Length: 422
Image (cartoon, one colour):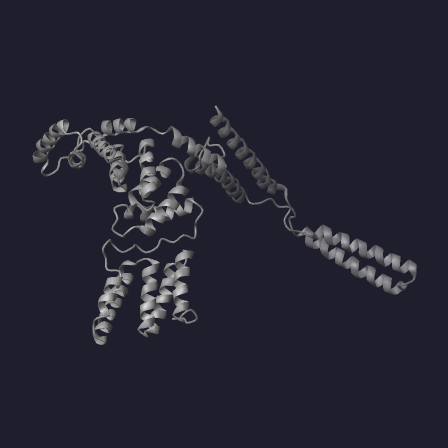
């Protein structure tokens, strides 16, 4: 009922606007053209009266007064003849009136169509505090793990087959039977959880992993909980249940930088109406993850839109980080090993490391620390022109990230490059 009342209110207002605009257009039928004859006539009459007053006061002679009266009278006659030859007050042309009325109708109907298509009819105003409260309510009342698993299993009853499945199934059955007599076998439970997951038996995999974590107790690692979290999310069709959220908390207590926990934490907030929290979490996850992390394509695609929704229009997606294991420049061990080399070989080794780092940052991007390392190395090698060029590029890359830009500028100042421009 409330929705229909809102529709009625919208169209009543639209009709009133159309009526007012239509009347304004139709009044053009009786509106005179731009003709100032009446105003000019009034001015001439005032001038004659002024001449008579000047004559009575004695400021104007009789002859001069007659001359002025004749001149003003002549102008009045000219004005009368001019008005007689013109049609004062012609209405606007009929086609123009039709176009004007049609434009009003089109504007009102078009506004209504746009509102119905892209608007939210019946959706009440929601201040930010109320939206957050509603999101918290959604989060509290979302479906539990068992319900989500049942829904996912009903939607996808057929498990995809894979190569080697026929050989794996009897082996997993033997493992199940063996663990029935050895329930404290942690190695066997770990294998069972992994292989049940491969077979698509998500519930069995979850139970095996939970049993393993219970046996390990305080010795359970963040990786153990991260695998359990992954199993719960996959079994629920990608949704993060309250039970999965508890696992996230367990992981972050042990490892605040755990990528699996941060990824699913961001998904949970996105699913419960808090994209701003998703943006904060995934922005941090992007900064600490290698470029080949499995969640990197998804969060890189989502971050710009999340930034816009979250009120961060100046956010710029940084370059994709280097893959895990990629060469990141000379390590402490590399530097220690160079100390025993002749000076010429040390210089050659440093040049090679700098060239490798420069090529990788140019092609794949990297962290602010790596850009700072390259700037510092080029400065030490007395290649200041290259260092200044890299400094300018780094400032563009990290322009929207205050902490990273501060690191770049600090290194530039230490190297004496801060006042130089490429």
